[in-house]
Image (cartoon, rainbow, N blue to C red):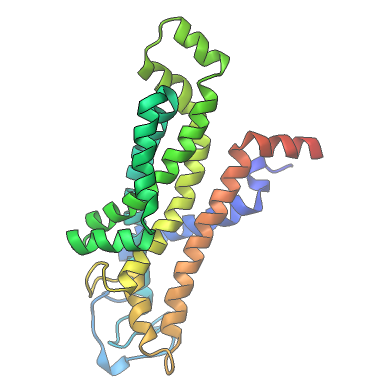
Length: 280
């Protein structure tokens, strides 16, 4: 029996398995955690992985496995919130700019260029420094540096779609601009948006971890991956596995989202499907 086409895409399968595993760990963290995340055990500082502590303990004797799976909840929550809002804002801007054109396009794209002119790391750190740490504030900082990607891609797609015959026919029949935008154009831009969103989740994880690493993330003892990596570097000469495990967790998560995005692109991009059909 031949597998369905999505299951024949290795990037989609591997990335999907990684992300499903991560989401499962985050959802069932209260039952999978072997120790309270804030429980100190100074007698077992820097203990190696064992049956009692699956990934060992940190410099304060806290169970690393429990802290990492609870940290997945934080990273995924911030990622999902920031990507959802950034996609809504960027898509709305891109649709309006691409469909109406003229001064609307010029105004919205100049605003987009202003945000693109700031280095992403500098802008996120500045926003969090002003607003303070917190899930909402960190998400707002990530939104500020990621919505522009959706705006530019959706605008470019809308410029092409607005000239298509079915859009021209809807306009000739008297359909309103919102009806054309959300009924005719938006459904045909969902493919690129879904791909950008999957890749954006990986970007959000990196930004959140980087801010925690630099001391601008959620305050300790919150079990974020960035904090775990940060204090692990203080003992990297003698106890390197703290940094290795937390860094590998971030790397595998981002890799999973990137593979998932690549797989979705191959499936949703008509040009990719045409190439596959030509090879067959």
